[in-house]
Amino acid sequence: MSALLPITEGVRKAVELAKYPSTKAEEEGDVSDTSILYLGEIASHYLRQFANKEGVDKTFGLYDKDGVFYIGDSPVEIVDDNITIKGKEYEGTPGLWKLLIMKRPNNIYTPEDLANYAKILHETNAMKHNHNPKSMKPKYSKGQKYKEIIRRI
Picture (tube, rainbow, N blue to C red):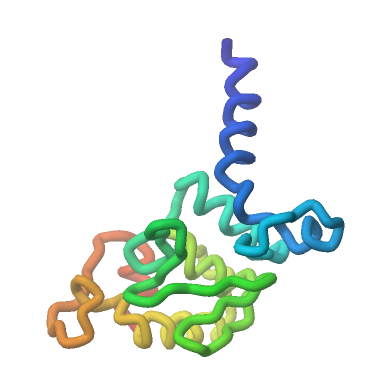
């Protein structure tokens, strides 16, 4: 019975990610719905982890609300690997994606990635309680990411 488990897992993941094809799917003509996101290799890699829900940070990272990605109080647009929030486009580097998705980004990001992540957190009120810009109560977590990264921002 354990031999079937990987097959079941693989099928479930493919179904969950079917609405987020890579840019290669578009180039090959495999995509017919124009409302589908077109993802690059980096975005696809990290959004697969998001779909798996393993080690994902939905407190200070991306979350899904009614089929739209958000961070804080703001919707996120993803084209190829890049991320646009409130009209500002950020280069979708592996480090920035790791900060946006993972609970434990493990210091695999550049100072520029960290600066962009800090801007995103501030601009989207992601560090405020209930994402309320007027709130004086900061959002808190006991997790490693909060202690090592967020608290310093």
